[in-house]
Image 1: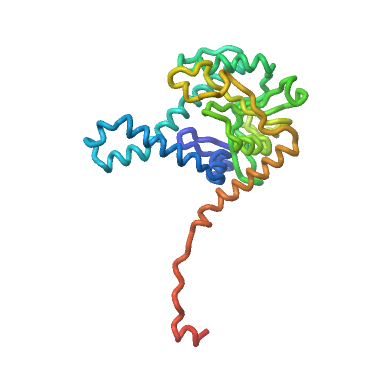
Image 2 (image 1 turned 120 degrees about the horizontal axis):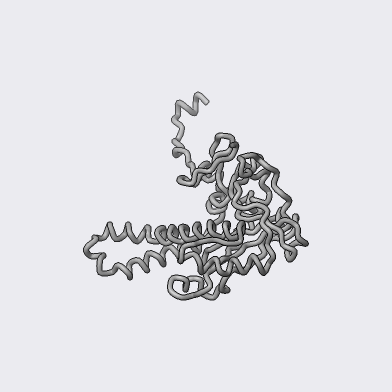
Length: 271
């Protein structure tokens, strides 16, 4: 297989060489100032929750714990998101699914979304690659709907995050402009022409308990337009390439040579 993915390291290899993923390139190429404040908030929340323990822990241990508090929150959300993605794929493929109790509130609305929008899956969870621009990734769903883009193939990215972010326009455009996808037999296939990119924001059907974090987001699954039409998607792809360039050149840009020295009289005379 020309394109492989290691789930443990979350790394792709294309033609035996390391290749960076779409989401990683976007993350490294586009500043996210809001994340800094979110991370600080998580550190503060950790400190409030563990306030009685801090004197026992000591300053250094407490600072280390606060520094990684946002990682624990992020990782827990990622585990939940992966579970929802997995069971949502089975539901879309077969029309039914057995899921853990904590996932069911998400799937109820997703099932209603599939029916309401008359979604017919074409491809699900397939890795993609682009040799010219050297990137890889995995799209969630390519499908058709008589209610979207005149029934032509569209891409639907599934998000379980608190909200939908505009940078997903770049993510879906990169997948749409991949040169190929890898089928279930490990064979490269040309990407279908994508008429529109969308996000299915999959949220639980309740806002009680831990689900309160979704705030005012609509209950269940809502569909958001990321880009419709070849010209719009191509524009988003150009933005992705710009972000990817920033990400790929970071190391060279951050490398600073040794300071200059003043040439000696002998060196000047020799020159």
